[in-house]
Length: 428
Image 1 (spheres, rainbow, N blue to C red):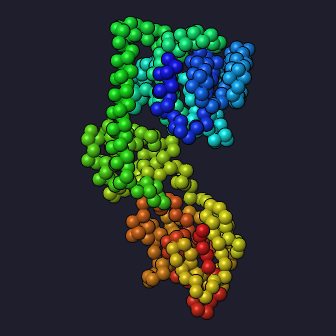
Image 2: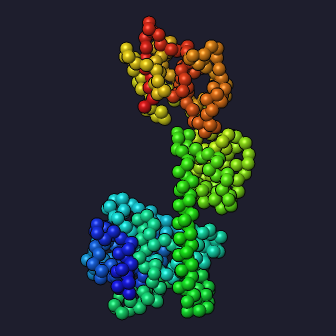
Image 3: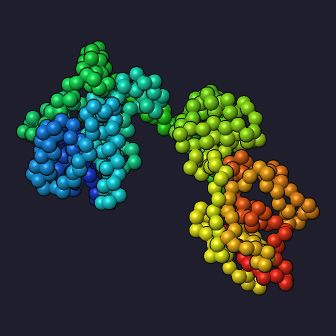
């Protein structure tokens, strides 16, 4: 096993650059064996352990064992206590989220190149059945990836019985988590009630199933390449990501591709299909994103940049404003000119504070270069602004009068001339 491990991990790590490695160790046989294999292969690494305080003194004994393991291997030891209420639902998911969040903190703080976990072939098979029961797609049925960002799982080619045999042959000490026998967790129920019967179908069942999962991983890689090719035609702008309808309408089977393109943003393929069949102005909203239908494209934006409230008002003094838009106000220089991000105004016509706010349906202004007045809503339509762009548009006002559609157009009533006390108002 040692030589197979040595060959396999060399394919996962950039050994030539002496990677800084963190190993997640629970105290169970899998992670203990992983730490010893790394030591035998001559890698430099550090250990990390999370105590969730779920099993009272048993949890503390797990931590103590990992601490002793680190001392015996003469490697640094990182540990943290992140208690979980045993009466909470989804304990295993909660524990996983907590430890991976901590791993990210350790990676950022200590510049680790990789975090190694002890997932093995049995875990891979159990994951397949869990995801089958939840209706997973191609990516999910491919199982756990050997390498995913900073996470590396070097034991995936090895079965549990091989790991235990190595531990016994090397007289290693580990702890058994008694909760592993509880069938109230889906993974445990699959392990005890499904896996034994499934693996007894034939001697090659496990190996063949893992091979099928690898085929699914390869299939998803091919899908992912095509997805990236499609997304290269999308353009990122201030309003969000502009998605030409031509890049998605011709896809077949459409539901399949819409799922892979939009599910990561929280959108169901069915609702995206409905959006494609409707008219401009319609949208669908997920927890963090908004997808808006325009004439010939979709606009994908985050909810954090849209505003449902139109009552945001900010007072702008002679010194300017820092938030939510940085506004600088200064005496105009001789060569200063109005531009997209700045305007020259007649200071004698202004009294401070000015007001920065979201535009309102009833707003009108007197555009430079035009006669008469114009509704802002009509101006936005003529400019072919999207609904998201309109929703996020700021206006700078003097009392009830619009001075500037910020970044767009100045009201001619406030334009500076050669005889006026000119001020430059600039957004940074």
